[in-house]
Length: 160
Image 1: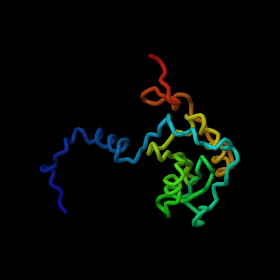
Image 2: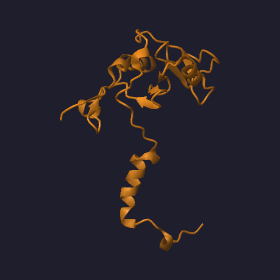
Image 3: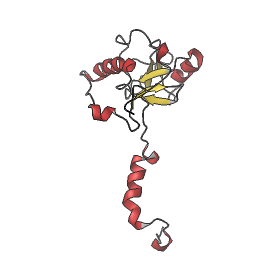
Image 4: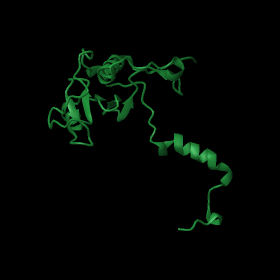
């Protein structure tokens, strides 16, 4: 394949800026986790005693890509394996789950990741899962990192 620079529609002076936009934008796969969720009312009252991250799927026994339901603490496989956690949400309407792969928290109703270090009801389960997975407490973000672009933390706005 031959590249003809005269047919390039991209302004060469903007290459760096466009590359940065692609890196930090939608093409990078970066997802901004929500700092508020209206579906936390069904969380288990005890999220400090949870199954270990090596727990297989309760239905198919698949050993990896598993999520823990934060309502009933069932461990079920992801939509990339046999979709048992997705089925659980559809049948039980338990919206919030924690990934044992990367310790992210997902709300099926919001169709979004949740920031477990910012949303206080999720912080303890994230810390417990982190300790169980890595054998040490998670690093904590500084307050500057916790502030998001629209100044919303824990679902409230500051200032004004």
